[in-house]
Every structure is written in C-alpha cells, then in structure tokens.
Length: 291
Image (tube, rainbow, N blue to C red; front, side, top):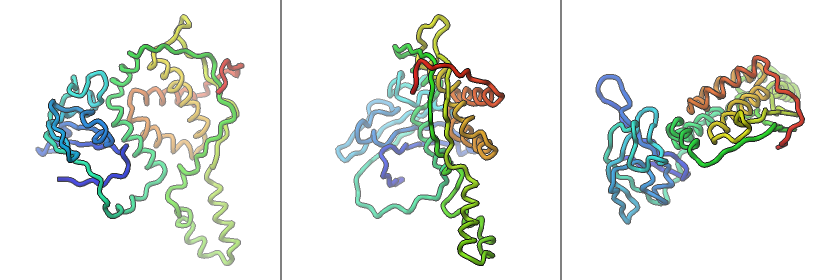
C-alpha cells in the first residue's frame, strides 16, 4: 500500500514494473493523470470491466505499455488496446479521498532548469508515444498552410534559467564579501556579479519561410508543425536567445533534458538549430502575416 499526498490534479501517476532477476529491467509501465480518477476513471489502459466503488476507488487489471510508451495514450486504440506496445498487466486498486492532512514537507530545491525538465517529463508521459501522436495528428481532417511569418519586438527573459538557487551568488562570493571593508563595496561586488548573467534577450525581427505543399495546397497537421515550428521557429528562436557562450552550455541541457523526451520532434529541432548555427540566413522579406 502506498499513500500519496497530491495537491495538483494534473499530476501524472506513473507506475513502473521492473524485473527482480539480475539487473533491473523495465517490464512495463502504466500512466494516468490523477484528475481522471475523479472525472473519468476508465480513461486509462485497463481490461474491462473496471470496478468502481462509491468510496472513490477503482480496481481491476491494468495494461502495461513498453519502454517506448507505445499504446499508453487513450487515443485511436481506446482504453483496452495497446497494439504492439502491450507489455503485460498488473492488478491494482486505486482510491482517492479528500483529507485535511497536515501540510506536506517543503519541496526539494530545484533550479529553473530542473523544474523545466520535471514538467517536460510529465508532459512526455501524457503524450505517450510521439510516433503514435504524429500519426494521430496527421489523420485529423485538417490541411494548413501559411505565407511568410514575422515576429517583431519579442523580449525573452532568461535570467532565471542560469541563476540557480536563490542565494547562490552570495555563496559564490562568500570569501570575497568577507574581505570587503564597507557595505558599498559588498553591494558593488554583488551587483557586478549579478549583471554577468543575461537578463532579457530582445529580438527585433524573426522571419519564417512559407509552409505549404509544393503545389501550394495545405499540409496535414504534423507536416505543418514540422515545417513551421520545429524546422524554423524553435531553432531560430534558440539561436537568437542562446547565441552566447553561456547559452551554448544551456542549449545542450534544454534540448537534452526537455525536447529529447519527444525524440522524433527533438531530432528536427536539433537539426534546425545546427543548420541555423552554421549561418543560414533567413531572407528579410515583407511578411504576409505579422504576429
């Protein structure tokens, strides 16, 4: 029995089953966004029937997906099919209740980058297999295209990504501050160090090429997102924001820890960023659409 104290209904419950023989090996995993325990308990991978009780509990046999999360999302396959992703089953009873418990312990200190990675991990679990998501988006009866697009006068605040924990600057300067004889000297030393961290990056103009099929017609949703966001907007914005030496270190962390959780799209982002970093020049044209 495991008791979890949760205050955020968007929290993702991630159950993993490992082999106890030899090296720990993932046998299967099961995912549920906790709000569905209240609003729609059968919105998960399970074998029918799922037993629901008046006390707020559900019990039954739940299907496990493989390491790639194939079939884990309740989309085209429905709640009782996993296709090639089926990787076993587990019997569970889940019970939610509202209880006036003492406040939880303070959360572990995390930097902005660590928080960003944690949030992206939950998002990746909700999305499930990216290959299946792309296929589902492509099957929607939508065809999209656009002309040249321009983003003007965009300001991006990035200082929090690099300042670490609150008080880190004081810790770094501990010895130097101890040798300062006056308050003004200590304040000036602190301000000089804080100013070394970039606060805001301003982008005056960011232009994107038209996205459409060769004959000018619309593209399916996946191809459109690839062409507009992942091949152009994301890599060009990353180049503008993280084009400094400090940003060069951060780009690896962000792409490796956040985007890489969505492998197929992340490859497009990295490809576009490398291309833009090699000096690809976007023509400065009069845009047909200005956002």
